[in-house]
Amino acid sequence: MLAYITRRLASTVLVMGIVAVFIFLLLHLSPGDPAAIIAGDNATTEQIDAIRRHLGLDDALPVQFYRWLGAVLQGDLGISIFSNEPVAKLIGQRIEPTLSLALTTLFVAVSLAVTFGVLAAWKVGTWIDRALMVVSVIGFSVPVFVVGYMLIYVFSINLRWLPVQGYTPIAQGLGPWIEHLILPSIALGLAYVALIARITRTAMLDVLAEDYIRTARAKGVATSSMLLKHALKNAGVPIITVIGIGIALLIGGVVITETVFNIPGVGRLVVDAISKRDYPIIQGVILIFSGVYVLVNLAVDMSYTLLDPRIRY
Image (tube, rainbow, N blue to C red; front, side, top):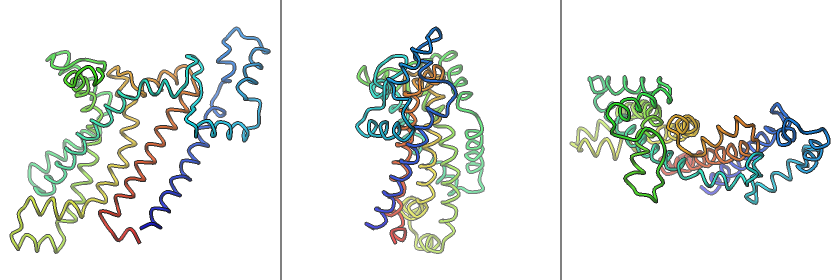
């Protein structure tokens, strides 16, 4: 077990190192001169050169990388080109809406998807199975922004049940906080539900065909106990895997969803930074998102050992 954990941690460090190199090169491979962007359109060559020296852009790439990596390891993600504020501070100001949207979407989507997948496998071949799979296909096929605008039109403009856009911090009340997250969470989570539900159904069908499940049925084991205690646990590895893979969909979808629903989160921050070519913000956000995704994959790998002890060896 210790050897397995050590190998996974080592591979995680290696992956994050490679990610850090690509994120650093983003500044140098992208078109445009950061020093010229900071200086403005009317700057002279001397002013641009002075800014480039101040930023250390005249140094060799390895020197710049080690300086940047050392700052990142100390929590310094750089200074925004346009606002002249620390990137870490700007991300910290926007992190609550993004975390709220991501966590509520994850909780609701996984709960619904696993339930739908188990139900479809149990009722395989019936109208319930077909209906759930049709909904899954539609959910995975329709883009997030289309679902978002449809939800706004129906529930906000026509029915006036929920707010159109915006975000209310949880400190201002649980009710308003939830109201502003319902539509974005549904829009973002629909594709996630579809993906997990289909994999859950497939994994459950494989397990339900095993001999020990037939034996449990013959012994009169309750359906709920057979499905949840015996079948779902043994089908857990592919389900956990697709949940981890789906985090990438969630991270990418957050950017689109925050734009559609005008949520002032990290996604909106990076969209604005891309339009202005504010490279330090782009680098900082990509680094954080990449780190979260790598850590989620590590957690998924660790969970395998609880679901299937054979993986430890």
